[in-house]
Image 1 (cartoon, helix red, strand yellow):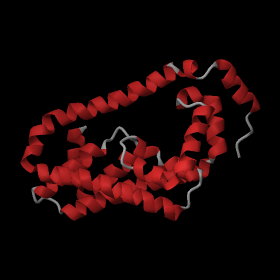
Image 2: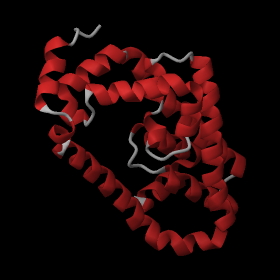
Image 3: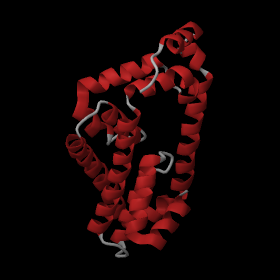
Image 4: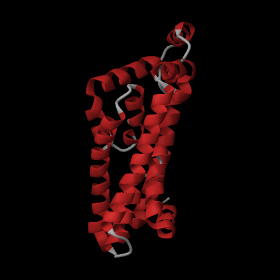
Length: 215
């Protein structure tokens, strides 16, 4: 994965960084922890401008966040809950688990978006409950921009200041990134396999039988 990310940045420059960060927000196994440090390293070598790299990363990340926010607005909470009742095993979330997550988000609101944008994997999907709530777009953008800017700046600066040492860790970054992808797939498989233990059959049947039709 490291080699592929490096090739995209080398060929497409700032647009490639923005595209990769957008993809990272849509498909979490593409890790920003590799994209932005590598782009920062390129800036340190003089191949790219630090502020241009940073801006491209932020813009791409925000585009992905807004896409998930829009998806949340279109789906609505009742529809998500209905899908969890019928297809909870494959979504790996039950209606009750969804209700608890939604309640937590209702209580913490904007701060949940801000903090969520600083946590790998969670940062990808934190936009969905913001759209489901729905949180006003302006408030959502303010919190998600703040969190995104901090995260992206940290990763870019890390690559920038590592400079020559960055190539020394390249050898283990590739297998680490692959291990992250494998770990995410394994976690999903585990949640699918243990779904019946977490959500008893009677509860599933009751949720499906009594659930309202989605709007």
